[in-house]
Image 1 (cartoon, one colour):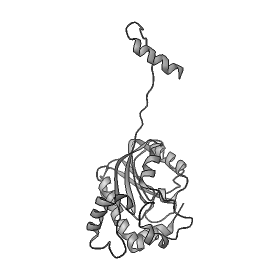
Image 2 (tube, one colour):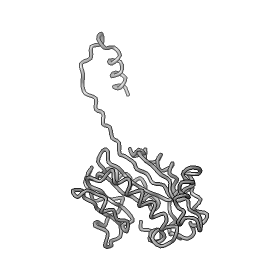
Image 3 (cartoon, rainbow, N blue to C red):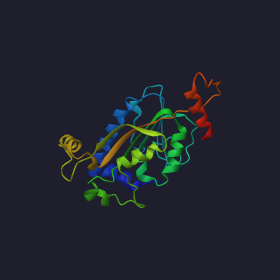
Image 4 (cartoon, helix red, strand yellow):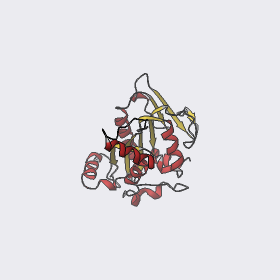
Length: 234
């Protein structure tokens, strides 16, 4: 689902621009360690990261709406990629703008290689930014805001586990300009969960275990024999 109001707010509103800068710095920093392979960006096509990747990497920008920055027009709930073909997915504010989490995340898990990463950012539902700025976005339908802890717990259901995380955006009106480094330090030090946005790096973990037929001598290894029979009964 397209949310031009959110994209406009992030690109034009003073506080939205402040958050955009912090988020793009976070994404660039995390991508610097994941700069090889096939990288897919699934939202906010105006944020470009071409210069981060190695020359032999493939960087694709996908969106539901066509523009000059978009290589592929597609819905996140029906990705046009083969199984296990993407090494890294960049998904800024993806969860904020989608209610069908199951379908979108199932698709991303399908196309992501084992050990692949999803780098995402989102507006923090617990952040105090809502007291000053939420009305200025005016999104219809309303944004689907989650807390960072809710996102992390939900991702575990899909085999995505937190590798790194960061809270960002502690500025209040007239206090997020030249002194933003001080504000960010104070926020991270004393009230991290009240940040405006979170950034997460999640890794896909899949461990396939297959039992093979074995000849077990009950006299030589009685414990193993009992364990295998217990599995057979489950």
